[in-house]
Length: 84
Image 1: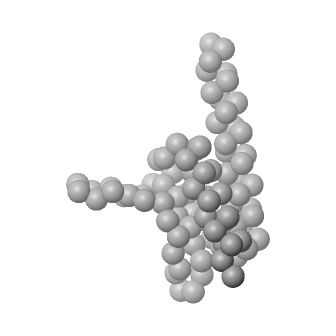
Image 2: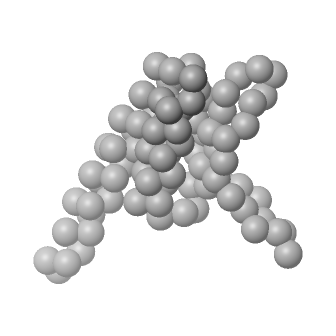
């Protein structure tokens, strides 16, 4: 039981951090979408950044572990700060 409670705390922490990163992205006019990205045979899904009608967007597969979502978004936002 103790291990399950600790996992729940970790999940809550990752969710909170993800929401904070999404807020930071919005402040930089970057839309973040967490969606179930479709998979097909022979096709691997990747999180990524794109532009849609001139607006910066980051797509995150919500099926990936929360810790990976946080790591990816933090990395993308870090790149945003480095790029002029």
